[in-house]
Image (cartoon, rainbow, N blue to C red; front, side):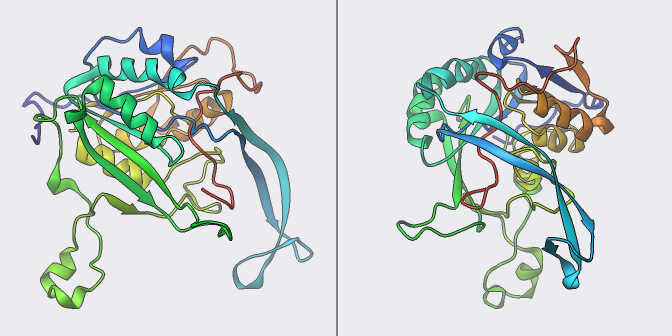
Length: 313
């Protein structure tokens, strides 16, 4: 079950970034060539997802107060946005998931990142494509950020569905799982407490900090810690990773830094611009960019999920 890499020398990881509609691009790839696929498609919230781009400078008369009472002035540089609404979400997602199944290595895994609005429908769809026995886990990414509803229990989690192409043969590198602290270390003894424990199917992880170094400004950027865990545990060094709703390129960075090759696809010009800058260290090969992408929003974007807004990250 814990598939091991071949004994051949590991080839340095490569990174390819494709600009365009992901469906025709996916159809050009050879079957069974990706060991891990992670996608974080639009969540069909029915809203326009927006993330303002701000610049802050220290100013005694500024409009914001920061660390140790320092004053800062905020300048709005613009915003990134895309429409997240589909008349038939499964009709949009279905052909792309069919391609994902075709492209998966026989021992490969798919991780589909959605939210509570669509997860039930997506699971039924994936059961049909993969078969029910190929469903391995539903991972709940829980966070604690933003406002609280006065009308219902505030939704503070996303859902990640894990399917293996072969439920009896997939990669699960148990020894590479990052460990977390025990909630009651005094009950397990100092040795276990120092080592920590492995996470369950509920992952507590904060969202990307609006002022942190990891922030790219992309509306729906996910924490690299989430992708680091998935990549390191569910693929081997030298494997190929695919993300065809690549957004800010988090999957690509996690893959390359862990010694895996990655292919990223997105149709939003801002996503391409951010990925080119963020992943420049990996010297990516760029495809479909003979002309510089304009900033005009596509009619049906391939951007990622939801933005980090006060209501939900």
